[in-house]
Length: 286
Length: 338
Image (tube, rainbow over all chains, first blue to last red; front, top):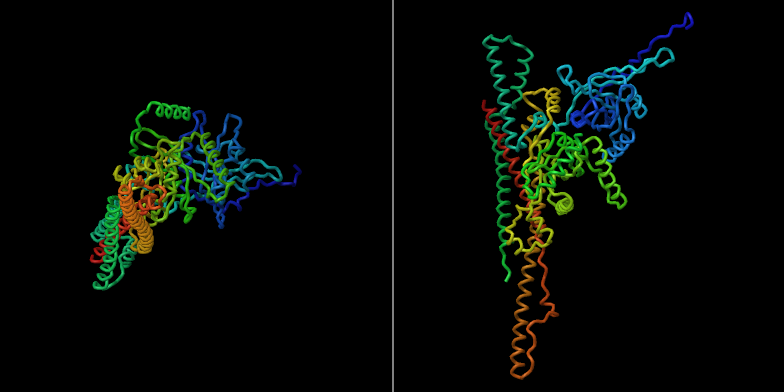
């Protein structure tokens, strides 16, 4: 190196400053399922992440599939043809899903990952690498997302640094509905409308009880009053519309009557169906 | 390996089981439910279908994975494409040790209007290759009511025999004692998750006391939903009355034909008496070439059964939603009083 010539190790941080990723729980499910089903000699599972890039730059990870790979101490080999076949098939169903990165199970980023990351960066400009720790090594399941940044010394590429980006687990409302079901290991039957309603009302009741207890505690001085909570409570109570009792009663009764009318109509229809069926099949031809 | 051992056990099960135990429960994995929800919701309001993969064990049908079908256009060359897609997907999934057996298919529906002839035909197609298959129906429009509307359906055996014989006349139905409730059998669904997944899920989304779906359930406005339901119901009633008119017409023409036959027979008999008196050969009492003897085909009751099923479904839905609304209204009332 020439004497006055300083080369600076460049960390290009500006491109990754505002990058974040959102993961749908389906992806986690897929990854766990593939991990459970992996062939016995494989230690970890590698696969492709599909999704889209939102207009504000966040990467939305929506789907994934596993790719068979062979791994030894020195090298990692991915089945590229399989990867392409699956990609084509998935795009037939949903052409908007494109490759946004890849995942692997296991806690950290290993040496072989850099090669795979390189391969994926040939397909997509800035792939996201997701690691899902299925071994629960930290005592909890950690899901982390990384992007790779090239460390360059002057003009020479030294290494790729994996920088972590914030990850957000988000769920669509329809999935939230089934969420209780998805948490436990087995559910004996799906709840019907009324059962679900019952559960909801019980929860609401529990919440109201909590608030009562809290207010009682504050009044009796057992718990220090927290102004923000007090404001929240007063907001909630004030959210009840101020209607005079007769007006409110009229509203409720009107809605009740509408519902009763609909119930009556549907019962009539069912009676009609029963009658019609008896007539249809009981008719005897001479 | 894990893959071949499941393959072996399936072969064993298929070989040793002579008596088909009735299907009691469909066990679905959470993964499948999420996939179905995602697929149906992304492409709604279009109706979508997909294939279910899993294992058939005893009286439980396990569904362990699924994949969606691309929307098929009505084009001959894309038909072969669709079959290729299926084979390709099955092959790829096989390589990652996913159960490779088709156990049925799923489809999305709008407000529960899924009882069509195509559904029955698809069932019959599947039934020829697979011993037991189910159809899972998912209704994405009910999820904003806070209900997971997932149903597993199967055609009942007696109905299938009748359908194969392709005869839906009154006597046959009375023989088998088959009415419109017997066409589809609904099978209870059980959900199971691997321990790893439930650990992850509990980890990532802590148990909040109130979830989003509670907010959805407690929403007071169910009017738009009820209105659409009623609209569909009214249309179905119109269809049903049209079918019934067809029957009326049939009966009327049948009785008219019989009256004609009687008069013709009497005329023949009178002629024969005259001929016997005159010593000639009596004419035969039947004349197959006479058009009034041509049997009128009885219209099939399949359509009316399906429509009846659909109407019953709508009524059930209306009942369910009305019940929920009652709860909500009373809750509101008591809150306000306090």
